[in-house]
Structures are given as structure tokens and as C-alpha cells.
Length: 556
Image (cartoon, rainbow, N blue to C red; front, side, top):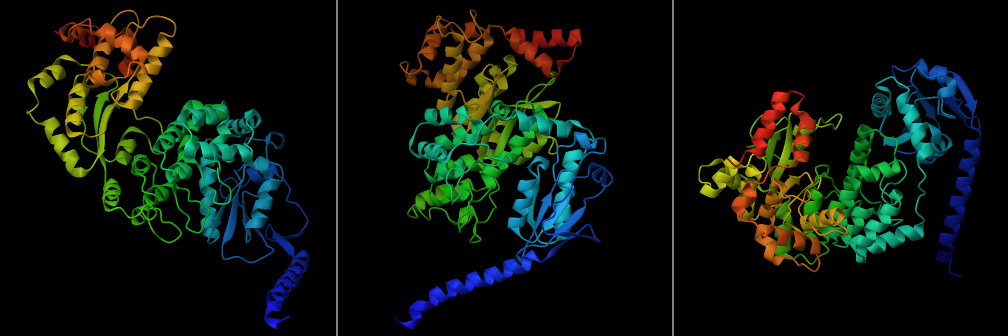
């Protein structure tokens, strides 16, 4: 046998021998613990609740020697124990420090497995300063109130989660259904077990092992914007998250949702290229998937892949470099603006057209960035966009000028509930730009004339009149809500397929019996007025009387 054929075999045995020597040397090492205390490698850390309570002001660091050297350290942070808790109250098992630093990822993961009950969090860091910063953020978020409620809720949640992780065969089935199935099939799967989307530690569930693709990766790669939209709406549903954590407060639920959606949007895969779902959508030329991802406020378009390229730098690399498609996707990366229609929660001030802002700016206007709770005083009743800056300027000039048509001016003056929204809706349609408005009876923001809006309206009527003849939106009597829905659907009523949407067809037949002038005289339903009172109208009787008079007599 030629000698050069034996080199790979010799190299293999040499690597095995060196590994054996390193393991033998490591067994004789000792671990440096707590400054001047030494412990053998087999000794386990002990849980000392009193020692934790005495060091609440700063993280305690413990260094662990690793079995092999690495260029990065691994910090493992443990939520500190509030001082008010005693040893019997603690849910921790074996951890005795609030911050552990390892030189090897394997050792860090092994430590986390031994201390699952302590809810450890780990991160690769460059030095101890970064590790302390990582631990301090966890410390602040965990014990800022100094109460027992947080740990109690953590413990209760662990006990209440009755959902098992899907088997590999089940995740493969979901992946293939996303690629080639229907939204109804995917919805049935993810509704049967929230673990299909929520993995351990509130991270995205991996649907393709090895590459570690999540549902966003799969949908973007397969050019399935309908599937991507379904998963986005599901992840933003509080009821879906409540299936997983029924004992969470609303604040905790919103925090989990924000954390999970951020990971779905911005977490790269585990291949050499390390690409996010936005990279996939751009690379495979999926225009609608790119549009949908960029519409999410949490999407970070500046994330670079493993080759140092942003998503907009690899457009259509796997789609044949079609010039028209490339230009269309590139236009989506231009800074986008939305034009909000703002209303006061108490209803005392007239609605107004807000200045064009980016989606993130609008989000910060409406919600506190720290708590994600709504800011009081204003709400968005409709949105034009997202659109580019030139289009936003044109639409804004149209809305703020006196060039509005006489009929539009009349609608705006006489309809206090939806007058401004009706005018802006018509302008948005003339410019052909996206449009969404709030429909309280549907409890969602949608363009009612879109396929999504029609499906929501049909589903609502079916739920209201499952076995009875369809009458009107709010019951047996026609109300101003019927008039508003009619105005929103009027341009497309002739094109609605009555076979697929029979309930909307019956409602349309009822509405055709009335003229538009008769519809304008219909009254606003009391349910709508009650919702406005709950949102901030107060308990002042004069205020309620004034509010009702404005909404019920707006046809005069």
C-alpha cells in the first residue's frame, strides 16, 4: 500500500491520543471557587439562599476552568433570589452564584442542565465586563419589584405547562404543510399545540434540524406569504400565548410575545451563511414575504449574514436576477411612512390626520418602550401605508388641502364616528396605497374590502346568524355600523362571490332595500358608546350625554 494512503489513518489515531492526554490532564485540575475556596472537579455547587440575599446589589461571579480553551467566554446568569424569600421558598436547586463564567460552551450547558429550576440564561461574551452587564440586565428585570410574585409565577407556569414538545415527525409534517399545504391545515396544527411555534425558553421552534430553520425561514424560502401572515398573526395573538402560559398577567404575556417575535424575525439559521428570514425572502425573490417582514416593527433590516451582507445586498441571488423583480424588492427597502388617523380616547376632540411617521415612531408614540403598555389619551383609528416618502407627501397634501370634493367634506362634517376615516379611505383608494381601519365589532384593524377583511366579516356574520336568517351587523335593527360597512364595501359589492360568502350576500340583500339618505339617519349602537365610555369618557353624566348627542345626532 502506498505510504500516502496511511497518512489520514495516522492523523486520526494521533488526534485520539492527544484528546486522551488532554482529558487525563483535566481530571487532575481543580476549580477555583469563591476567591480563596478550592473545590475538586467532581464537587457540585450548593444552593445558599441567605448568601444570595446578602448580595442583591451586584452580581457574584464564579469562574470555572474548562476542559479546553476557547476565544470566547460563556456567561451563565441566574435570576437572583429576592431577599424576602427564605430557603424553603426558593425554586433553585444547585446554583450558589448569580453569575458563572465558563471558558467552554459544553461546560456551561452542562451546568444549565443541572440547574434547570433556576431558569439560567447563558450568552457568549468577550470579557467579564460584558458578562456583568448581561447579568445586571437580568437582575434588574427579575427583582425590580422585590416581591415574591415573580418567582411564584415562574414556578406556577412551569407546573401549568401541559404541552409536550412535538416529535421530529410532527415538525416535519408542519414544515411540509407550510411549504405545500393550506392555511387551514397549518392553523389546525399550530392550534392543537402551541409548542409547534413556542419552543423551550420562549424561543422559535426548530422545524428543520441541522439548519435550524423556524416557520418564518420555511415560509420565506417557499414563497408562501399567506403562511407567513398566518404565523405572524398567531404569534401576535394574546389568546395563543395564553394557551401556553394561562397564569401570566397581560404585561407578562406582552413581554413574552415581543421577545418571541423578535427572535422569529431576527434570529439567523445555523448554516454557514447565517441568514434571517428577511435574507431568505430577498434571496429567493419573494416580494410579498419581504413586504410582510419589513412591515413588522421589530424586523431589523441591518442584520448581516455570515458573509457580512445585508438582506438588500443579496436580492434575487437564487431567483435568476430578474431586473424588474430586483427593482421592486429594492423599493421596499426605502424608508416607509404611515399616516395615522388619531382620535382622543375620551371623544372630546375631533379626529385628526397625523403627520407621516415611520412604523417604529408610531409604535413609540402609542406604547411605552419599557412596559409595552398603551399610552393614555390617543388611539389610532386608521392607517394609510406603509408608503414611500414622495407618496406620503402627496397623500398628506391631498388630505390637508381644501381641494376635497363637496361630498367628502359633507361626510367629514356630518359623520363624527367614521367621517374622517371614510374620506381618507377614498383618498387611499385613488392613490392605490395600503389602508387599514379599526372595526370594533370585528375587534381588528383591516381593510374591509380586501380578501382578509371579507373573510373576517363573513366569519362574524356566520357566528352571529349560524342557524337564523341574516339581518344586520349589530342585531335585528339597522344601525350606523351597517352604513359604515356598506360604504367600505360598496366599490366591490358587485364582485363578491355569493357562493363562497353567503352570509355577506344575505346582508347585502337587506341593505339594498334602503337608500343612502335613509342609511345616514341610522343611529350609532349603544354598545359602541359604552366602549368609548370605558376607554376614558369618565363617569361625568354631562360628558356622557354630550358624547351620545354627538354620535346619535350627527346627521343634523
